[in-house]
Length: 155
Length: 176
Image 1 (cartoon, rainbow over the protein chains, first blue to last red):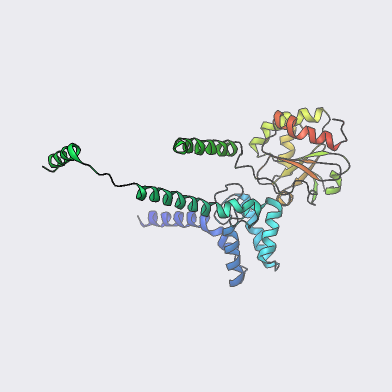
Image 2 (image 1 turned 45 degrees about the vertical axis):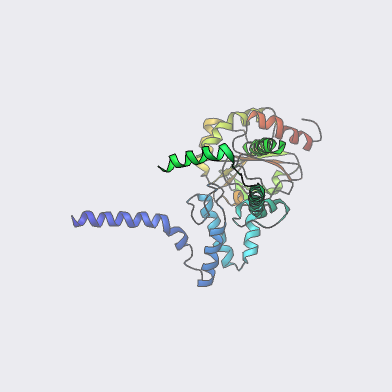
């Protein structure tokens, strides 16, 4: 019984290691500050193979190559900007989860605020139109009919 | 009042245009920032040999540079076309990406060799510098080593005819 448990534990830790070990092991020779920069950089670079993961999350071979590049370049004393330049020179702004602000990305950066403003404008126009509409005044036979219907409803 | 009926039609029209635009773009194709720029330098060796293969070896005539690998399934899809292009006299340079020389050579023995020269990139360093993110990827280079075009994924007859062949023809001075 206990052997089974131990085997299971071993399997589980092996499994956990395969998922989490790569990024952690790669930081072994970095100082605390360098490791922080490493973590920040690999979490903000997109994996090109899987596209919806950062290179920190991805197990794709290319992602691991890029992590290795980031690590060596940090060790060589390159700045974050230089590392960003290294990857964008090869793969374009697409790899940056935080794309730079320039005319081709204005839509991306300001689009959501534009849509929000448009939504608010539409909501305001509707509200204004509704408040301007005169209240409906019911008189005569219509009023009797309405009262009758309402009474029936409440009974 | 007309606006009330026109507005949904306008919104629909805008959506149709956006969808038409979006659906024609494959999100898996990341445009290369290297188009129009000189091909990155590399320092490789010929597959199965110690002879160095460098960037200079690509210069002097327009070439196709094809990143492939023996483990790459999609490479087999485009392979017959590469063989055909090679027969037609198109100069294709192969870069064996993240592969062993033995596997690469065995693959070519089995399927045929369309390449004028093959460089080995076992670590994928040249691939990284060229912005390769999945084989096969094919670059059209002019005689001075500038990248004119990059094709991601297997080349098909249409991509060759409409995109790559005209650029190759232009790069070799009009004669196809």
